[in-house]
Length: 437
Image (cartoon, helix red, strand yellow):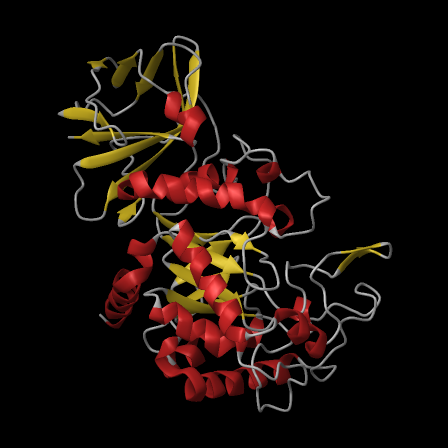
């Protein structure tokens, strides 16, 4: 009974806002705005890299302006929550506020963290805080001296104890402004105790742990997959989601509540001269990655990892992808917000084939109506026909979500569509069909 109550309490927390939100933004911001090591090589340092908190503050300027931009990005894109790196090992463990804790010697004089929390809440968004889940630090050789250890050398135990004191300070300074926490790393050893410490101080906060999806750590609410373990197919797909095994069936991820962010090497801003990232050549890449993450079996969220400009604004090379998501959510938000992944008995999302015509689609269904399914086609069929397997169920009607036009269909091993208009796939990144059963 105690376990059942705990499972229900977790679901209740998630249902308050996290599950219906579906879309967020993860900001890597601080001493290394943009993420990762400051210098890829001795000859090439990433932009927006600062060696000291003083350098950072001189560049960042007013915290209220930065916070306003971070929040406006989310509002523009259609995100419902935000995650900010309040402190990061890749940023020299610099606190984004004037902490009074002596263990953290790198800190800003102005309160960027508080400005972010207040601005997000004022806009009706839910702000979460990233916190590093281990005590490692990049060495001086890797970062040309920009990072030096700021916690005692044998500091794993000390880091956990210091982290508990951070929670106390955050509770005193910010209280209920904090909507959740994103803990980095697999929470090894004693650090697995931190979620319980969070729950004592922030009982309603969402607790995400990176790279853990088995939920073996007490008080964990959400697991997240940060990296692709294999080359996805299509390229914007997530390797941890669909894997094409044969014509009709795909391997499905665990049926649980998870968050998905793209791999950092593909999304952090690294300057205008890096052109290899797929989003720079495909303005719909991020939109399609969001759709495939949300339109799978179970319940997942999507919060793309973004290295913003130092003033908190979106980098110019990311703007086309942001605009594509924003434009889609204006007409297609019904298929995203307040939805979940499909029940396999109706649809098997992934690749679909008929008469040598292949395409790719994802599926969502409203939380409150299991008779409606949104089929989001991101790869149009190469021929005139499309077949969507439904295990024999016949829909009452099918409509194009954007235009409202009813789509004629036939039944044969599923739903057959002939001569359907797939132009939105090319023009808007996706065609959305609303199936009503």
